Image (cartoon, rainbow, N blue to C red; front, side, top):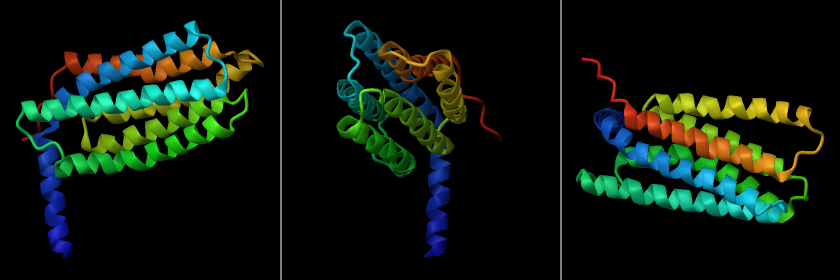
Length: 206
């Protein structure tokens, strides 16, 4: 049994390496789509002056659900275009890497949605940044290496913002929280998507 598991693992790793260029092509439009949604969400939240934590959480959870649905559709269409099986063994590995951190983020988000006080938007914002960064880092072992760098960027900048922003003001208004979400889930994704679109897959070692 152990020999069979090791064989299956080697096949999965080899498949991931062979399909890295496909994943790179798929990631680029996904990141651009998610980044655009993040920026639009921040702009909408500021223009509509969304302050109440329940409405804040509902809006951003809706944006997250839209992003996940859109990413699924983009990935499926890319797989069909390349005549690849969508729900393949490598895809299952990536999904398993993402599930636990994203589930923890969803748990915190729903908790804040139903139990959060009016000044607890930050407790929605930063756990999602950190859990998402952890999810990206876990999935990065099966994706282009720059994905793990994006994960470190999320977590390090998130920690920096969590420490610095309260020092700048005792009472942060909702615009700061929307801008923070827009920067992390909008701008950073757009930068990553543009990078993937404008660069080529590094040559594989011989």
